[in-house]
Amino acid sequence: MAQTTPLTSVVKPNWTTANRWIYRLSRRWVLIFGVLFGIWVGLPLLPPFFMSMGWDSLANAIYMLYSFQCHQLPQRSFFIFGSKGMYSLNEIQTVWQDTTNPLILRQFIGTPEMGWKVAWSDRMVYMYTSILVFGGIWWFFRRKIKPLPWWGLLILLLPMAVDGTSHLISDFTGIGQGFRDSNAWLASLTNYAFSSRFYAGDALGSFNSWMRLLTGVLFGLGIVWFSFPYLDKSFTGLAKFLQNKRDHSQLDL
Picture (spheres, rainbow, N blue to C red):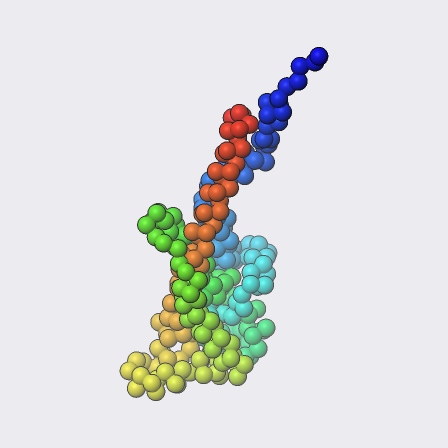
């Protein structure tokens, strides 16, 4: 009678090359995220450098890529290689076109004298850069930080929702003409305690600029604090599962 081999000695978990790579990626997900997300965050900063070097086609390609994600209005964007970091709507209209049409305004990318526009608005820069920064901070202190509850995330995202929605409603009145452009309501509320440059417009140091900075940073903090613990738990669980599969297959990584 032929001798049979026990099924348990024949059937073993299959440890494939795909398993090996997924295992390595799951153990280093924060590093991989940081590199890929860092590239995405850094690309919008490159067009001014490319424009200054005469690489217009490459700069325009990046402007086009990020135009689907951002309004790219020049009066709410940073400029590099110019005399100022940001310019008012009037300054842009003087050198570009005397228009309040956002579809025309967004086409202005700068001049050699004014410098060149970053491919993201200031709000987008604050939002995505803060995710990258807070992601690194979270990684170092992840053992000491408890996950943010869902209601905490809502609290941190609410300021941006209010600020962004109020800007949108204001822009329906006309670019440069809405209540968020003059902020007369705020001037009256604070009894004109600050200079006129603080209340009106979008320049650095203005109320609108500060609000986009604050809400962008709170957004990034909320996204990282809420989502990263869950991502880490998922990737850690996946790594342990694959490690067990490797150990049972008796194959080296």
